[in-house]
Length: 126
Image 1 (cartoon, rainbow, N blue to C red):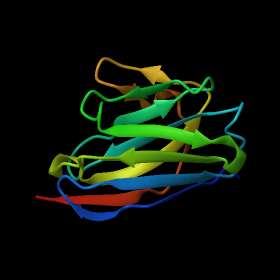
Image 2 (image 1 turned 30 degrees about the vertical axis):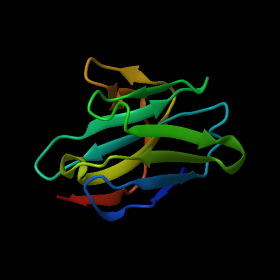
Image 3 (image 1 turned 30 degrees about the horizontal axis):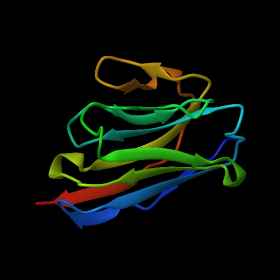
């Protein structure tokens, strides 16, 4: 059974930072692309950041320059460093893994992801 466990969510004020972590039970070094997606109340899920098997990141336009995705293959862990947070970043953030990265005009799409974590809540106050 594939497990993706997110952590690091919380409540911060606008302008602050958070780092999310996703511990995976799978080998992320060569078998899976990884990504972060989010869903705000009343909105559809959207891609935030993905990283492919070659380590190339892709970001949603809304987070470019503020968020950074990275991974530690030895720990099978993916991170999302979030800086300059805004109230509109408030959402449940989900870690995902899959065989490919699919990029859309606005950012990563979830079509290539097969496995999902349960999410970690990020709340940004103004």
